[in-house]
Length: 520
Image (cartoon, rainbow, N blue to C red; front, side, top):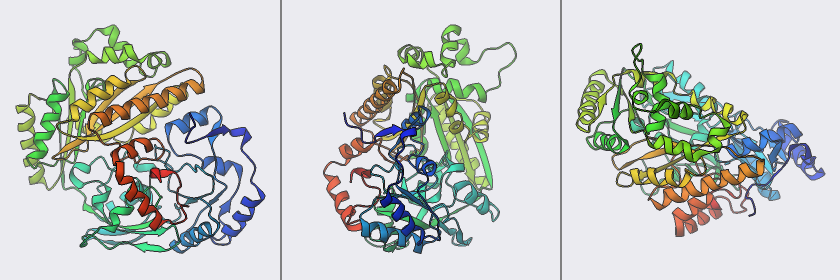
């Protein structure tokens, strides 16, 4: 099978051609000298945090690198670089912080990678209108800290908060951990300033607008329609109060039913996370203090030898033989639901009371505030622990899809069944709506050679996405499409791909912007 993304040995990285060196000089004149064809920089910009590319890096390989990297500092420089790329017919790939996990910034055909992190100003903040004009290269954690000084917040807290940009959030149609209350990035973005494939600056009308909402065309476009340079963002006030809650359920059916009832009753917790049984086991180790001499609920009901095997998830041998681990995990039943309410003190107390009533009526057991408090303290930690798995020669990846409530549990069981022979799999449910929620699967696997690892990794994604789609789920929810979900996106959109092609031809008539992405 021909790979969409080809790899080559890092030590065989081709030297810059005379043409790319000439292009670099022309681009440098447009961006105050900030352009490079250095081999180490080209290798760095050949990938994002797509796990398959991380495996390649560890094995001494790289994806096809760009020919030139440029670092513009203004919208005018972005437009000038784009016009030059359009004139020459050279691919142009916008690049933020490189935190994407789907290969969205990999330069499939070489060309120019344009790093926009120097566009990093907060141009204005309006505390009364609760809005801010911010450039696309602003890192999320810095943006949030600066807003907090004025009693304001983005309301957007992705796991990549410390290493992702505002432009990346918008380009990938991201969701933060508190999306249940504040919405996804498309709900937070009032207007976008972007440069299209002709080098023209496009400023979309501010929401709300009559007729077509042009802002929504650029949100989630992953650099294929334009380079996002800045945005006017809706803000929220920092919460006056927080209430934490946790509940144990007999299974995911009871837990998802409780979440559905909470949201259909009009209650909006900021954070909702229901962990499946094995994820509950891992999470619970840090969330629940156990009386001396007493085993936890799961530990008391579960064979100690099997439990030890499950807890050795980081073992290369264990995750290389996933069927036994998945069967052992099937013996677990209890699920942990974490809820966090924030906002005006009186309101969050009422919301927490109503959610507690709903959870108890659904058969939940009140576990108090500690699970949610501990989750908040460690909310960004998991992303930084994955490197240990890769260092061991194994891999870990996540697949986030969404489904309506009538299909949620079917999606969960079908994906687990499809992936169980190939990888260890666990899941949590989050980003809830009155009509459904997102399912966030984590896969861990291992194999022998790099070729075997690639084969297994690709098989996991084929099986997982096919199972999710067959059960009625979306192809993605908030990580974007990149290269890892292209086929699933085409399958989901069907004839709608003709409309995407038409938009591409309008925004990017020469097809230079991030070619090969979003199926165009």
